[in-house]
Amino acid sequence: MEKSCPIPEPFRAKAGTVFFLAGLFLLNFMARFILAPLMPFLEQEIHITHAQAGSLFLVTSAGFAVTQFASGFVSSRLTHRKALILSIITVGIALLGLGFMRSLAGIRLALIVLGLAAGLHIPSALATITAMVRRQDWGKAMGLHSSAPTLGLVLGPLMVAALMGFLSWRMLIILLGVFTLILGSAFLAFGECGDFPGDAPKPAALKQIIRLPSFWLVILLLIMAVGGSVGLFTVMPLYLIAERGMDSTSANTFLGFAQISGFVAALGGGWFADRVGPKRAMAVLIAAGGVANIFLGISSDRWLLIILFIQPVLTGALFPGLFTALSRIVAPNLRSVVASVAVPIAFFIGAGVFPALYGYLGQTHSFSLGLVLAGGFMLVGPLFAFALRFVETDQEGC
Image 1: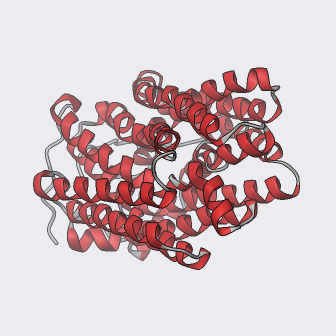
Image 2 (image 1 turned 180 degrees about the vertical axis):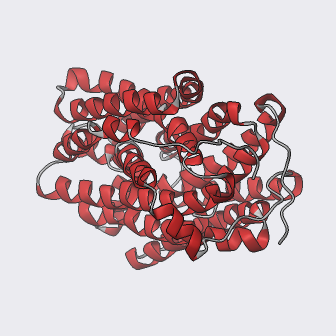
């Protein structure tokens, strides 16, 4: 399929379109992680352990990783716009199915489908944004798009805290599925971006990418960031309830309001990355986020709530710089390819393996130990950030 690349424009001219893509990303993310604040209710109903609960996110991340790898083949045949539509509509359908599943096996099946559908979004969204927005505004555009997960971390727990007294956890998931289908239909009707094909990960391109040291460094940084934020979030309700003695409503309310600071920080993180450069921004934020995660695990109850509000600021502001760096380690024609390889590896480990590990440690030792280990891992992040090498000619377009 012949490409018809958009002309890069200032962020102000494309802010509405980026906002629309961020909305898709928000529901995509909430669909994958809404089970985190619902996990105490799910554990009680279907009688599963902490380890089995953590493994559910591994199942979702496995499906997510598969289609992340394959997204280049999909977008090269459909265009990025159609890949985004396919993703959001299928996510909505998978949520409806999840709401009706009664067994652990059925829930796992629905989560695999959900992960497969969700995996198409990020590579096509990143390729679309970097093609239509001029390079000097990438930090702002990535900041807006990357604020979607942190907003999801706010809305998910607060929605559970507000509605679980009136709805079952199944009905809440079905309601989220309906909203997802509505927004997907709106993008189908009004979305006017990404109408150009992606690049399938050809063996020559993959060989070129995996030879880059910066490619592996970005993956390590993404694993740290995802595992220390999203991965950690998956077990925070269980940690606050099982180890810190909170009731479910209080835990989800505190957790949701605490994540508001992360949402604001994600928007500011794009400005910070543009201002000081993505390497310096990543180095400062990932080290500070690691320290915050360690203190989440060792603080007394008095300090826990304070750290709970500080930690999302640091991890939320980290992602714009990371995604900007991901787009700058290769030439434009390889951006969607590198995203379709790097992001699934990072999310499979950070949002799949890490929650399973947290759940295992929570069952055999303590969730606190998992938080401390994740924070310690993040403290070596600055070394990787400063070792990154960007392409000499930082071109715009697709």
